[in-house]
Amino acid sequence: MEPVTDILLHTSHLCHRALRGTVVKVTCGYPVCGLRPAFIPSGLRIVGGDVADPNAWPWHISVYGGVDQKYFCGGTIIDKDWILTAGHCIGGRRDPTNIVIRAGQPRRNTFSLYEQELYPAELFLHSGYNSLTVVNDIALIRLNSSIRFNDHVRPVCLPKSPKKIPVGTRCTVIGWGKQGDSAPDYERRIRQTNLEVTDWHTCKYAIENAEIKVPYQLTDQMFCAGGGLGHDSCSGDSGGPFLCSLDKTRDTWFVAGIVSWGVACAYPNVPGVYTNVPGYLDWIHNITGLNYL
Image (cartoon, rainbow, N blue to C red; front, side, top):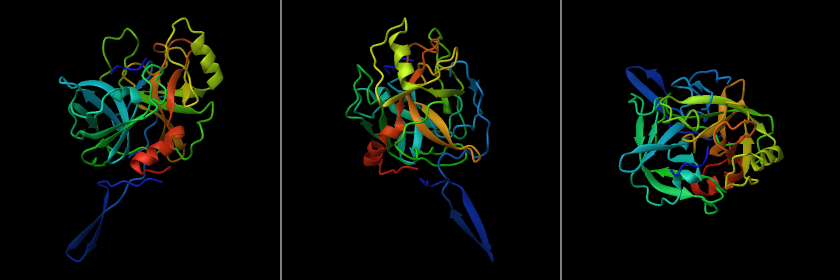
């Protein structure tokens, strides 16, 4: 999955009505981040994953660009005005013109009644991003109009602290990425797969000794997950979220990583590489004003 060249409270339409005589008083509430409208079991097994329920991941978005408005990356809603994605998805772009973001879209290139078409007002690429090494592979998109939250479009939580996700933690990666290096196109429906966070040093050794060589190097602001045969993120999943459960009893989720790069797709015994979001919480706060969960 090489780079493609390519607690917070939020306003929503969840409202409570109180009858007082003949007057109806409507009070709109704020959905808690990372909470899906209903509990939806994640796939036990992206490459080799399951097709996700249409409402399973309401914070996932798709990014389209160019004159032909072609899909090229995923991203994550972290606030009504902000999208989190990978640095290599933004690349050298500074002008947000010709970029379109779609939320509430369970099937790519298929109209949905709940779809919202959004446009960037400003792009924020990490100042330390390097396209040759993919270091600091993180970016933010400020929207020119706020997202309307509902059961189909919601924000995910940011991590609780800057600590790395422990090795062995089982999380979920989602996206429309290809089902393999030879696949002709991206998937039409969002897929999901569960992957375990792997040991950083073991991952580094596996990448350096793989038969397929890549120009990128594992850094402290990256982590690895997966490595099992046939389960991985791939080209087209870039920029999308690596999601971990905050509280398994309440089905609350936070974005722990961003799909970044890898040695091909589902290359045997070589994990995929993700931007470590907990390590960038101060950077996110300085730009957006958003705080830790």
